[in-house]
Image (spheres, rainbow, N blue to C red):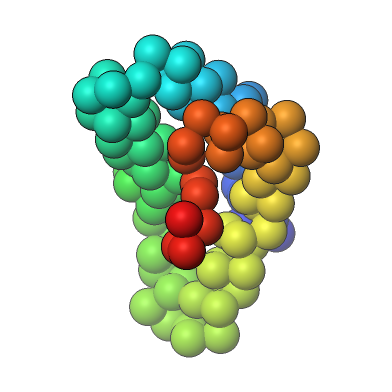
Length: 113
């Protein structure tokens, strides 16, 4: 139950984080040139750290989760599913609000482009 609550709280925090990520990429994308490339890389790196935060935070909850992971492979699958599902609301908001503009600015293009 603690795991579900932990990732539910993380999910709520990710919605504004995805919004900020989109806004920051749009801002550097409009500048263009080297700023777009370097700024996008820095923003992506910072956002990757935010996405990994549940596993980087050293709290009683994360220590408890690590203990359960060492005890059971099934719990590791459950933990992974909770992590992925916690990102879904933020990804949906990001896709609806920012993805079209970011593609227009040259971010998130398909592999064939």
